[in-house]
Image (tube, rainbow, N blue to C red; front, side, top):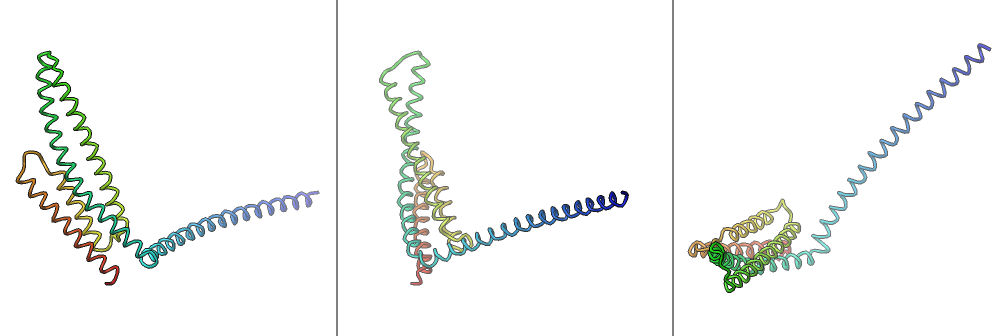
Length: 212
């Protein structure tokens, strides 16, 4: 009876050790599989990125060139529109401020002047429209420049050149102020100069890409 009890206990201990070993093995196996899957995923991602770059530079090269030309043309066209929108906004803002001051003068005296109220309403609507145009131009500019940046290699010199030009042109837009005619003319001339630099850099880059 004692021998039987001992044998059962030994069998139970043996089975327990076996289960523990199996569980340990399965746990290590799952960890190894997870690590292998993650390595495969990263490898596939790297392969996909390399394939994409190869497609851009080979099979889709012409489409890439056409798209870049289109985006650059849109940006240059937008720069003129953005400048006009910013200038019109400054004029509308100044007009609104003058009308608002006149309206406040009557309101302080508790006088309701229908003509002034109508002019104030028109000035408010005009300023609102010009602000909407500014925001629309800003959104378009952000969309175009972001797409151009995504199409270029950040490690190459033309990315840095165009990125700097985009930032400089945006800085010129926002620095133009009312009643500062001579300085504004200088800034507008600088804007046109930056656009010329963009065109020149674009031509140089496309000549390299096309090998012509």
